[in-house]
Length: 330
Image 1 (tube, rainbow, N blue to C red):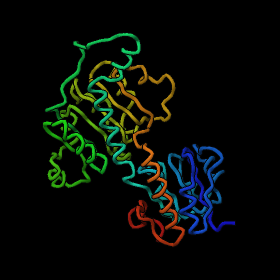
Image 2: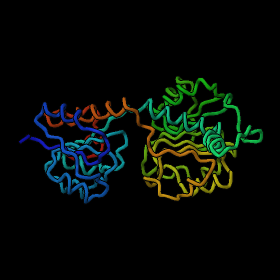
Image 3: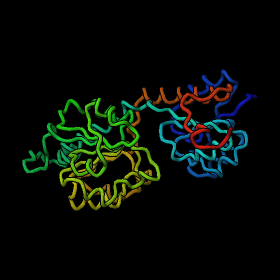
Image 4: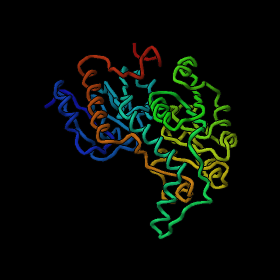
């Protein structure tokens, strides 16, 4: 019998052989939950005796943490950790780690793809052709990309990759709103640090890359949408809750903004019949911006190494709930 139990509480990968091979070095067994854990009760049932868990979206709340007395590490398959109670984990001396950077190229590619699909109205063109309509589109609201203003809300690795890739479209300006990044660094990258209100009012294209916090939830609400140009396009590959979906649906339906490209939603999976699915100026994908075969391999590898470090008595490299930052275990 292995010394440690590492439980995968969110399923979805074809195999966990990568994790098993890495964690064998510390005498740990990798156990996939019998089903995808979507609730607190699911997690507790699957991982009460775990020494570490690997998680994506499952709620890792105080109640869950209290039910896992042996747990020493929680590693997020991904970047965002808004589903994990960081302070409660710190109080119990449980390391929380993530895997930043694994999907930077993929998510930035996806943001650019959603934006260009909205600009060129590719889904509408595809549907028309399949329906037997060969339309030249001489009255479509399609505008040239060159000379437009790109606005980036958040300026982490993914946003900077979007900036790098969008340079080829020759934007007239690139505006950045990120209070956590020095304005001098933003200027060095060829962008301008501005307030959110300015970015919303000036930008032709707005791409969201902010983390989800109490302050950023619904940062794009009815008032924010009202500041945008009628020709503006909004892209969200970050977190669905950054946007008030009801307000966005109304803005798109009333053509108060031109279009939106969304890979993330307030509630996932997107409910069948959701109003967004009936809007021709919404381009939608199902939280797949992070995905490529290369990204999955990198993600599983790095996540497993973080668990291995903790079980070997080390600190994780990407430790997000440092005791001195959130308070808790000494």
